[in-house]
Image (cartoon, rainbow, N blue to C red; front, side, top):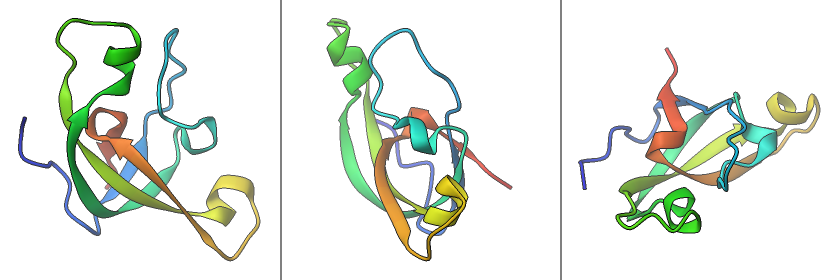
Length: 92
């Protein structure tokens, strides 16, 4: 397992892809920008496990906060989603 790539406060973009296999990236956050709240530790990537790959990758998992208005165009609250590191890219 590698050290976490993102620190709390980092702006990240959730992967915008729709893979032909299982993924834990909810459609409503795909391609959206959020902020890392904290790293939850490292866990096996569920995409690999669902495809029964022999050596599931173990990656840091982050709680990422998204503004509801950025997801749905309305709302004064935030939504948090736990996302694996390979689902995220740094947003500058």
